[in-house]
Image: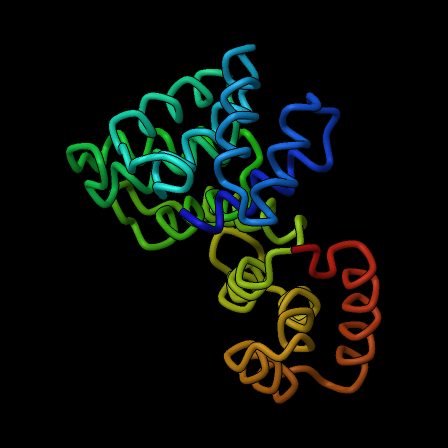
Length: 229
């Protein structure tokens, strides 16, 4: 939940938002939750989805106000109705865990899918995982590849690793060790231990010419899709 609050703050700071939200974020970052509550409430009362999400997060965490999961859920749903990605993602987590709501994996999946479609990168990765593993949905490598790609192109290292592995295994995408290396090289270069191992294994498969091509493609992908978050 804290990840999504941070994400909401980042989104709010990168978009044209009301003065109330900007003031609330400044207050929140300084630990002045009472002022954050006042400002987020003002934005929420104006119908602002970001304000509703941030206010819901305060109620969820009990910052500046008594913790109230029922109120948090209500506000998250209002923001989710406006297709706000962090609220959709929060509700997916809450329904999955039975956190403030009855556990309901079907509803959790629906919210998670909407969050992914609305652009929440972690939700895109989670959806890809579900399709790859057949968790709650029929196994579908092509759908998994599609969602991994979206998250990978957004710069999510774990998605880049998993998308690369699909190329290494020919699952949902053509078998292509050069593509596999190019995607896996990014998280490996960032120090991900499993990606480092995967990259080393690919180097034992690729011949000299293929390695040169793979490294060139990896450099191109790093410029386009290097870690952004």
